[in-house]
Amino acid sequence: EAIKQAVAAGLGLGIVSLHTLQQELALKQVKVLHIEKMPIMRIWYIVHHQQKQLSPAMIRFKEFVIQNTQRIWRDKYPQLEHLL
Image (cartoon, one colour):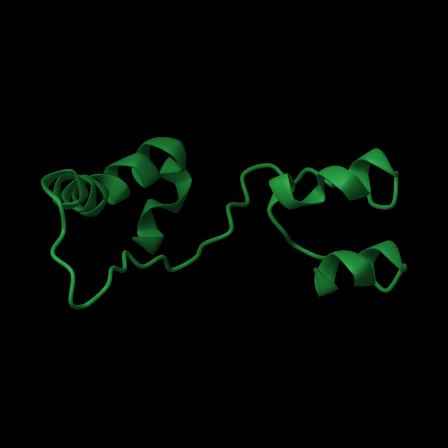
């Protein structure tokens, strides 16, 4: 929220998820600059409560994410494969 407010106040640029900007875009407080082929790399974690057992569906989802992340990344951004 602070990043959006700073950008709307004219203090510079910010990088935020597009879905968080709906109100600001509707009010024309900010403008989206599209930058092609520049994915933002982040580290994501799969977390769960330490003392609760995962359901079979949760286990399958976790395994899917772990097994397919690199393949999906390579398919979408082949020019960045050297970063994997």
